[in-house]
Amino acid sequence: MALHPVWPALSRTSPAIKVLTRIIPNGTRRARCAAISVTAAAGLLISWAAVPGAQAATSPQQTGPAARVRHIPIFSNLPAPISNADCLAQIGEGCYTPLQLRTAYDLNALYSKGITGRGRTIVISVPFGSPTIRQDMKVFDAQWGFPDPNLKIIKFGHIPPYDPNDFTRIEWALGTTLQAEYAHAMAPGAKIVIAETPVSETAGAHGFPELMQAQQTLINEGIGDVITQITGTAENTFPGFSHGNYASLLNLRYAFKDAAVHRVTELASSGDLGPISVDRAGDFYTHQVVSWPASDPLVTAVGGSMLSLDDAGNRVQPDTAWNETPEAGGGGMSAVFGRPLYQLRVGNVVGDHRGLPDITMSAQINGSVWGYESFGGLGGSGWDLFNGTAEATPEFAGIVALADQQAGHRLGLINPALYLLGELSRHSASRHSASRHSASRHRAGWTGLQDITTGNTSVDGVTGFAAGPGYDLATGWGTIDAATFVPALARVG
Image (cartoon, rainbow, N blue to C red; front, side, top):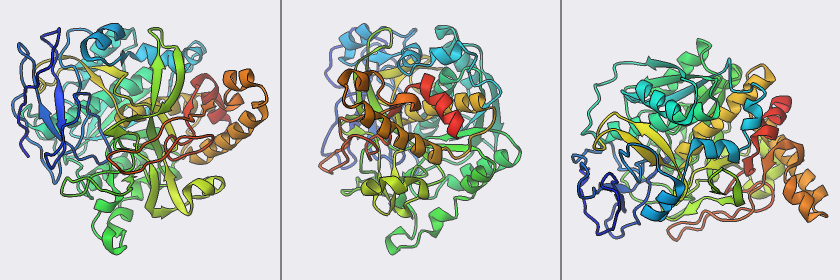
């Protein structure tokens, strides 16, 4: 589908700002201007808009069976990040730095003890990659005072030359940038390996064989302790699903089974459309669906939450479930996978199904994060704002790398340990409930899990899921205080 530029009548103060407007595939509704995030199988047609004086993108083309939401930034090509106050003044929404996130998730206490992910490797599994990721990460690191990354790029097959007029290539380059920069921001001592494949992942099985083969190759070669992926599509889009034949999906699980054997942790984004997704034609489902591979029991599904931070990164109010309609954190119950043993004690929530997400990290639009890119296609080089579970997933990959270092070994499938910590957290919170102050101050005791009890994921008239005490299908077990969660996960993992 061709994407046509539009020119909304919006006031702006900077000629370097580029605004992107989302249009629903049937053309009946236009969403507000905001960041567009990677989702496990979203289906919004993206239209480009540029402000006077800014260089407009050149009608990039979308390939595959459906146009999908991607992490296209609110701002494009700023020469430097601007303050949260300036973001609020110029677009009415906040923006966060990786330094604020480090404070919000209590990571600095770990860094001061030498827990940086040193000796661990995070693999980013992504179609095509970014042609400029090495230099972009150096600019990103220099801005925030991070060490240069130990970065390796491995190509699986022939990667076609980058085309700045190809929307598919732009979106995967953005996805690569966001994952690499924020995995590194959370675990600055970890090695980053980008596994590039030559086929785009689209609705259904397309692109997944190449991704799974690349992952299995790295796992068998001993490369990688944590694998993070923002690819995904609704379970319903796989051939045979409507007839109860799940073979086309199940036959792709071999890499995850191999990861479990080799104690490699697999992570995936839960999606950015709340309880819905997009079918193979690019239309929204009108009933609840979930995304694979996030729905796989051998994968930790990372959902989205919303933080309210001051300029130093301190919370000014508790986190909530991410919902900025039409975007919201993905989650629900799998139609393919039954309830795994580790979810036995949350059967009252998930029934007989695999439920997701398992955990959440920052994903909001009003509080998007800064990243740097120079690959072209967005009108030049510069600083952009990103959001979504494509942000949350690499952040949590960094957390797992820290826990691997703390433990001195790979933790592998962390879900059994995560759900054990969740149960311990729930009991700890119950014991402290008599003291409101104590319960607030030590929300999760020694586990480091911080429950999220407000918000929901309903979008577009489809009822989603509400956050509440304990495990829920809006936020999983909530979010984390890394200074406590990392050693707790290392002990029980």
